[in-house]
Image (tube, rainbow, N blue to C red; front, side):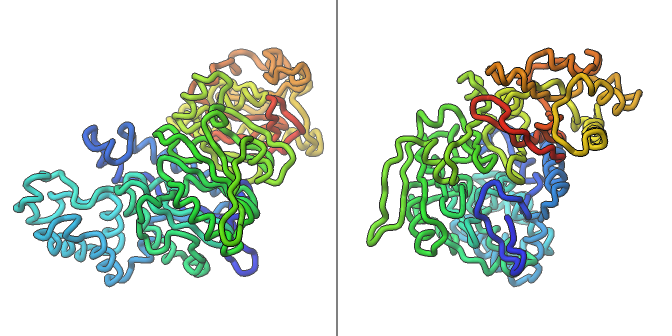
Length: 520
């Protein structure tokens, strides 16, 4: 979310413009409610290592804050919005009804919630409520059947995915109509979260579609299927979770309010692997996207524009050309996580194409989702592992990159350059002697000579250019768990299980024009 500098109006008209503010939810007790028996119902493929998830999420929040992004926490906004007991009672009455808990338990469950203060109430709504949590609730038919561990209020296990219940488009927002019943409490919580935001312009912002929280089947739509390509064009995925009826309705609402001039409706296979548009396609620069290589084969695209009295709809046979036009560029650079289709499908399953741009060319992505292949595909050579969460290297990588930048600027006046033989002392001089035995250190070297050859992959000889012994730098399989530290004129920093990649991407696998050196 970005803000108008004067009026402080929230505004989003690009996927890659400088990010100013985000709302996050730290994984918590709701994920400890997952069991082998209920994980599928709660939309998880496997149980979650919660402590590790929290560490990784903390790393993400720290990275964003380090980039000047204001990080707000969903629980804080909800606690503020629900400070008044009357507001908590109203939400409890909405969530606890005869249809959700049965006539015998309605008053008991509402009374239980009424005894909680705002932080406790918010935690309970998020983490869920079982029969054993409510005194005297275990003596009726409903509780007798579901048992003591049965949920009276299900946990909001997907709340960490804050992109889905709401999406900003221009100066307003989509309030999602969630496809799965188990996620509809999340959507309602976002109404309260916006009401609790300290900037009153947020709560006053228009809702283009989905106001009131009503779910009109089949017209469901979720935020993960909305990409704001440019001020004039929005892409909407038609997926397992978002229906063409809702896509058409949202497009009509955007046109009626003058929000955009064109909508690209991208029809995806209705399967778990292509759940949302942002699992197969995300924007990483003004003219570049990361996509699953199978996308052009399975997706169909329509261009929707305003018409009177009906919308104009035209089939777009070339997805790449349609996206380029939507982004306002002549040619689209496309990056994939792997050239091999088997590997690409594996990386896509792990959300390898699901990235977040904090500014043009500076991207945060899942480490396990194929960033190693992404790096190699762009002419980067990835070596080893840097800044692990388990503490093996503590923050050695971050100190290294900072000193390298200072060293380079001092010698070159800030000019961009590639590491060559004259940089022999750069690595060894930076790492303290006590740390030089640590292995392996992650580095990516873009070999421009190799790019000229045309295969787009750095040669092993690039290691010799660095003049560093194999005791420090060891070639590793990029498919392993990597925290990439990309050095020189190509690359960005790293943190925990979040890999950050920068600009200079060339759809042919080359490095393109020199990119700015940025530290995340």
